[in-house]
Amino acid sequence: MRVSCKDNKIRLCRIPGKLKRRIWIKEGDIVIVRPWAVQGDEKGDIVWRYTKPQVDRLINRGVI
Image (cartoon, rainbow, N blue to C red; front, side, top):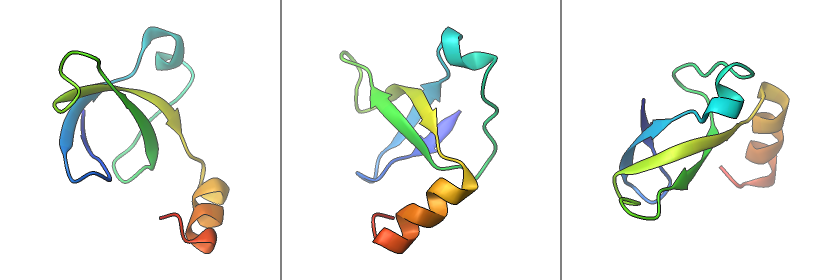
C-alpha cells in the first residue's frame, strides 16, 4: 500500500508477517512506518497502527 509520510515522501509499504493477521489497515489510518535500509526513500514496513483514541490524543498534544 502507498503511505504518505510526514517527510513529504510517498512510500510503498508492506505489513510484515507477524502483524499481517493481527491488524487491519484502512485508508486514512495513522501508522508508523520503518523505512528500509536499502530503498528507504521508496519502501518501508508498517510497524504500528494507531487506534482512534490514540489519534485523538496525538491531535490534542499537537503531534499531528
